[in-house]
Length: 186
Image (tube, rainbow, N blue to C red; front, side, top):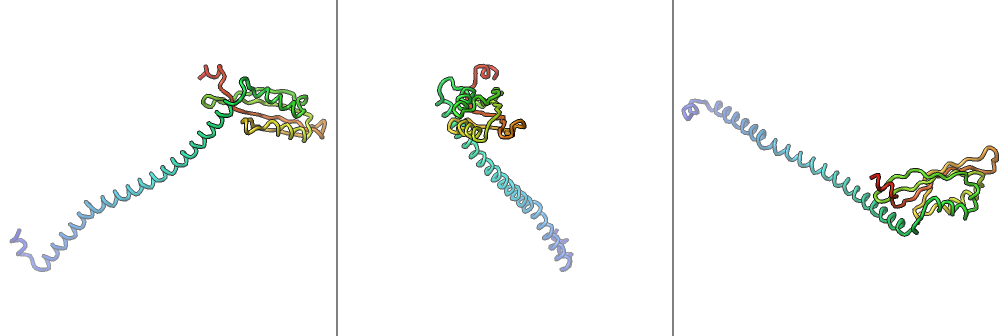
């Protein structure tokens, strides 16, 4: 190898050294710098993805805490009710207090959705020949956020036969402990 090097001219030696330097630089780039750069980009991308996932988890954690708090409130209110509470009788009592019990055409219980150890109790009420004052008084008495009783849907229209009166279709709901039949169907 020394004999070969001695036979080369100065310009040829420079070319060989330059070629070896280019080869060494390319090998260094290919074998060391490029993998390091790609690994760095993967780590940076993974960190960004994990930061996004962490932000989503934090948001979900806050949402879960709110649901947990709301669930605790529901449990507290439902457990404070008198034994034998029924949305149907509560609705009739409030209609009597508002003086619109005679305006009720029908009250139908609807199937509620189970939510853990509790379920939604939903009642549909059809009323007619109500004045605006009677309807607002009834709704004011009926809706009770403290007792978790809410009007979910209301359809109110003027009556064709008596334009001074209205008819109303209300869906009222609350939460109650699961009934025995609902517990068996789980």
